[in-house]
Length: 260
Image (tube, rainbow, N blue to C red; front, side, top):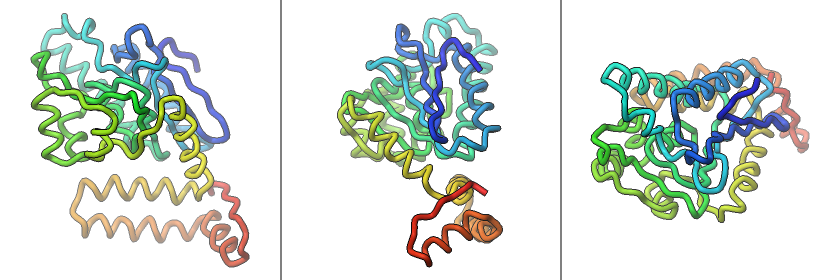
């Protein structure tokens, strides 16, 4: 599958998806979001993919936001349709069975910060910048930012970032829990790939079900959440991975998982 604004590489069960509009700082126009949705569809149906990495092309920007030039002439119906399009794609990313890591190599503003928050966790280059500047343009965040950002960093920090529209650097993003790790820019992809390989080496079914349980539990009460956890925990005992993982432990050897 070939795209105009999206590139991807699959290597040993790890797919790296790159938003590639460097001249526009990888801003998200409708065409790019449509392509990202098609790429997500390919990942959804490929059981050989164990981990997803999302990053931006070039060295300046992860995703600098939605394409303001494209938005500037939209009417209310078009604006709502654009927001729903992006929300749908980002929700599909959030709900991919595979873990998704955001490798934030530069500006993650507006839609870029919202895309990062739809990922499972985030590593940032020391040059990265974050923010939800939409109120300075007379609009609210529209790609899920009012919902996901406060869930990631807490209500207070989320509201402060959205109400002020201020930009923060990578170290501040780390301090408030928006990113898990900050590394020199030239080491970012190496560090992300190192973590992706660790995840890919584990029991694929167990990792995917753990993600499903976490996502389900965050959006419900704890009793409902742990009830779902009991179901997926039990389901694991029907897999070859469970038998291999526990047998390898007993035999004091490294497990070789097949994702079955």
